[in-house]
Image 1 (tube, rainbow, N blue to C red):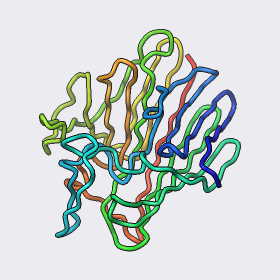
Image 2 (image 1 turned 90 degrees about the horizontal axis):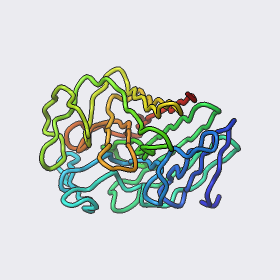
Image 3 (image 1 turned 90 degrees about the vertical axis):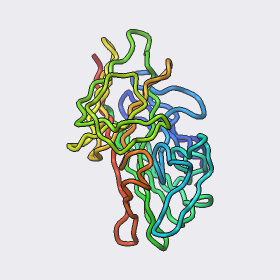
Image 4 (image 1 turned 30 degrees about the vertical axis):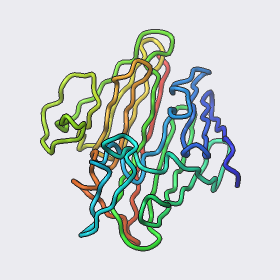
Length: 262
């Protein structure tokens, strides 16, 4: 099937997918109001096969060191799949399945499957990573750019993490866990009971981002948007907390966004 844009609808909610542009969710409109920052680099893109920054673009798998392109010098950031064209495996009125085959510069053959399901009050995103051969370390997550302002007051971000990953001058976790600090943030937080973050645009909309995963990066240093990024491990996690994808044990993660009008 072609990778032309796809529009999903459910109730008064509408999602636009752009398979040809990194398999991203280009828009999410509720009652005609767009919630995601617009632009070819924005919306919400899948971070896979790693999330956030990878130190100097290097990761080890056993004794072998691999190097990824430094697309955020001096580091590599957010995986390779957001730069590729995804294929449409299935599409309906309120759901779609997109796939992406892992190719160079990623050194291992595998496939990513992204299942997007829209309901009148929620969006459920499920991503799976499977190998075509040997095992490899991987991460998966989502990088949504929620608009800071929908025409009223700025959004409020509420969450209660158990810890914050201390961030070094190189923007990577030092390995030390600290008590959560006030924002602004470009930081990774631990939520062992699962990601649970509430975005409130006062008088307009409340949106909850939840996931069974225990890691979330919150980025709110830009004027236009706020990012709440559930992911399966911390930044540089291929090196510090590797999770192996094996033929018998693929990597799967889900995030659910639910919203209510205020």
